[in-house]
Image 1 (cartoon, rainbow, N blue to C red):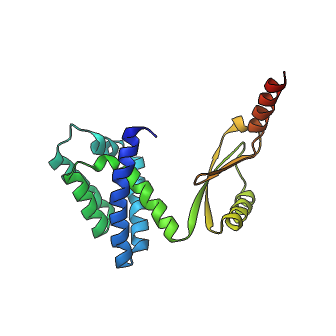
Image 2: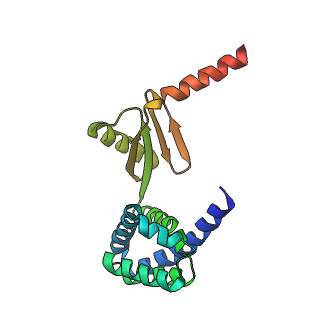
Image 3: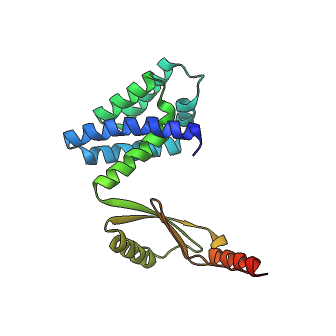
Length: 186
């Protein structure tokens, strides 16, 4: 991980810890989950919002006003709204995408859920996705939500990532392993 990314992740983690602890004290986990979904969607949908939080040209006051307007428009809860105001005051809004990701991870962990990033050569059918989620849930002992993408370069099979674990059953990786073996022999 590069140093700037590491610094951003560290800052986001500290804010996420504070927000998460306050929300857990209030017992408002479902509200936080809805808030981070709304905020994440706003970040992915609005190039202007992404530009505003990352631009050093936008003044502190303008960032504070803009993020307050966004928080009001999204109907965010008090804890998250106050945190965003504090982040704007401290010029830390640039870590907002990492904050959203960190909060999503914490909410999922609190609910006993994990996300599995699944890459397949062809789109999974609903039956395949359900069966895969069941198998992974049994293996990891948690409810598994799939984040499925398609990469035809895999030729066939799957690549599944859950946290730091990776299961690669793709034809492309098997061919690569065979090629490496053949280089060693020849």
